[in-house]
Image 1: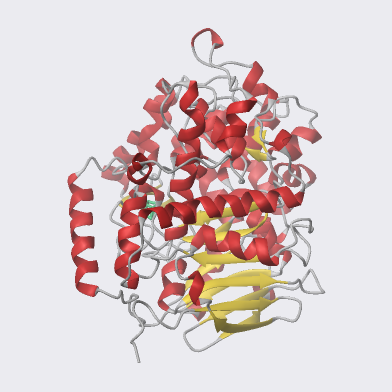
Image 2: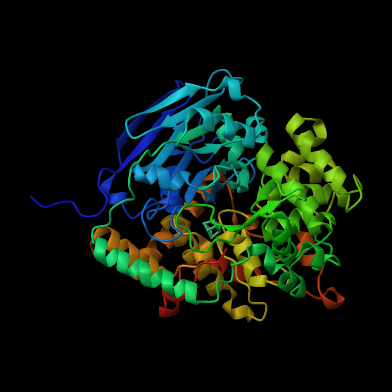
Length: 578
Ligand code: SF4
């Protein structure tokens, strides 16, 4: 009899929200190298009708940690959440840090698959997971609770658990709703699977929270512990000896982004913002000396520590992390100049359970259409509270950029496949625009960001395809994109985890097959080549000197990006980017 190598006892959880039942079942051995985004795509393509109502009982919500989650590999505990998106109408994966991914994998849980819907939409439920059992429990007492209060009260009952939760936006099934995961050290619900309205899907299933209690379960044991730890030691040492570009967080990229005309302001009518200096993450870092806060890791074992903990003027915790994307969309894009105001808006979004990118884009459109002055920070905060209250305006903005654009009959609605553009602008960064056009996710910088303004046109298709493969592989591994692992490094880790050869080509195939599954889902949902395009405002309205930078990439380049190219040696050394 041969002894099983690598982690054993893998299982998955099936949840039926129509009957409020849950059970463990074995995890298919042939899927062992599938995790996170790739696993979510595989399950959705097989088990979810792409034509279903995203908020109906036919949608399937998948929560899948990455392959390396729960191991001692550095920065490896991410979780993917997937479903048919109510925002795009296509497949969606959003990735989050925090500790639930690691805790699930310590219990051997490779995926949670949630189906069905309660008869009574007013009922709320929780899902309790421990090593011994999984069960659906009543949670009406938590109805309408904001995320921080929810997790604090859950913490009193589940003393050693981590949580996945939604705020009122998810309960109201708004298309801009996010799903929160709690931080490793503080249990703040500050890490969000933000994009695509997945919080609305969780809300449509009546699921207010998931608690994951790994107890004293150890990290997952690799097949070759000695070699695994030696590789991790070298990997960590090399990382810490390198430039550590996220040492002060993503917010420190503001001055460079502004210089490159990819710090869009006032609903993207400019690529720069005259108050960029007051939104620069350097201001946040300066505040640490007098207010406290500082850099931390959002999940146990992260060596990058890109997450800033932001305090108010009295030294009290306000929010984390205040990221570049949030400072852009809720700051410059709304003409709001103060990082402290953006910190308030970020906390409100985390509390209510909203994607800061989609919400910032929606408020920017509202302002641009004359609903409110650009720069009205108090008004923006009022709108977020209106979203939580469910007012007509709150719902229109909480449902995202397209929703408020329609309501205001506004012409400038910067979205792809119904999802708002992130900060990185497709006019100076055209290859990134190709990613936005072709990604199954709609406009999403984490799908394949390419910060290379000088890249020649004839390299856009390959650069975007390769970046999308690397990022899909990374989002399936559990490694954070900010660790910037290469396919070669992911393959090495998989080989050490399972004690068998895993080639770089195999990992590249996992990335490509993930994209292929997602494109297949979208095709069946009704998407066509016409959907692989950027909005008119990105083609007609320029940014930069004399507004010459426009998105003018030919359709043929966009089409070529989705045709599989032969893997070249360089692919295996490309770093994931987020
Ligand atoms: S690099 Fe940043 S976002 Fe990624 S896991 Fe670490 S702290 Fe979290």
